[in-house]
Length: 257
Image (tube, rainbow, N blue to C red; front, side, top):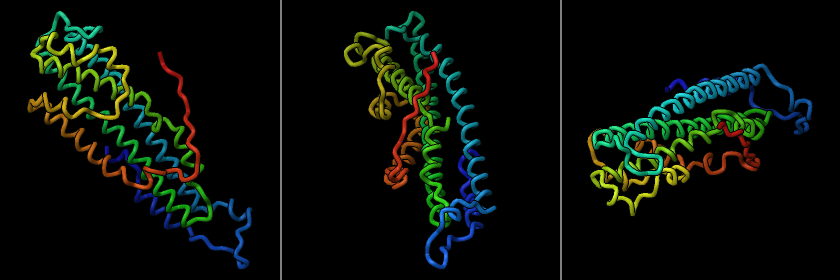
């Protein structure tokens, strides 16, 4: 997966080849000169656009895999939980634990992909900022507005899968904690359909503490590592205000039924 991140060193090498910005003798940059691209600037733009296409190909492929995997996980989930949230006729504790472990693994993959998007976006912001400081061509604002409309930055499906996976994990965890007795967990856990409509900001760590098998601890270690990585990025200026004064436009994608 490492080769699917932004090739920052390659872009930085292209950037260093761009002649540093110089004004005319009168100190004024004429409009015609400002829009004129050098060969080095064209190479930088070509490399940057190639990186965007790489992001889109990887994200679209991964998103398709996630949707197919979620379909398989739903089948396993329905073997232990009915659509109304009650215990299924084929329920066993072994199946419940297996489904819970699979959901924990899947959630870790989803969260890592979400952070992959954020890390690459942050890297784009930084390299564009360096470009605008060196060149007489301002790319940062218009390019980032375009990035917001790219497939790899459209994470609605990913966010929905994360929320759905968390809701199912909570349901299974409650069943395991109660020993499969629905009467014990009915007061604290709502139906599965109600949970899947919720939008959550993250994992409830108390839910994970109740289910302390070695397998799930191993599965969740990846998710925790990703969350710690993201927590360190939250203080970055690029995350807080990546577009500067550029307005953020939300592009609504058609919902696939």
